[in-house]
Length: 201
Image (cartoon, rainbow, N blue to C red):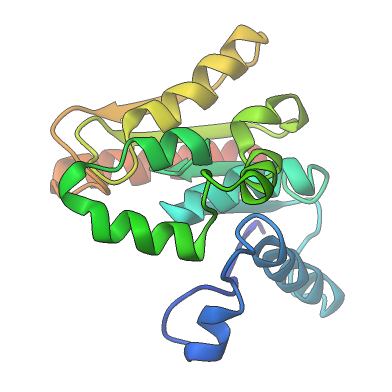
């Protein structure tokens, strides 16, 4: 049986200390938490270590990409749903009317205007490490996403396809940051189940 991994510091609902532990640790300690959770489940004998998928949306989509990069042998496949792939282009795509949101993002993620933080942001941006993705990947995106611009998914898909890698890519042109139309959600989940069954049996 296949399983899906994930939860990391910076996630809401687990207290302020857990949330703040993830500040400036996106792609680093946050990913260690995901990996630790998977390793624990393996050690407990709860899952087949050869049939593990990683899936998430938004920051979780980013975590999917980073998981496939950071621990490429841990996952049989991954599903990136409206995920960030390049912290630099992501920061630049934030709309003008979301300036307070951008300030918060720079405090929690990385301030790419600061050289030291920009260097870290580059190290933890999947778009700059595309060659490390070895497991099959399914990418899903809403074309009208105001939070995670479609360019984030386009970058990953285009770069992988340029390397000759087959990447199924679902784009819905009447959707934003996460699908809100029932028919699209059903189509997405059906496609994802088919993708996962192909690699997890």
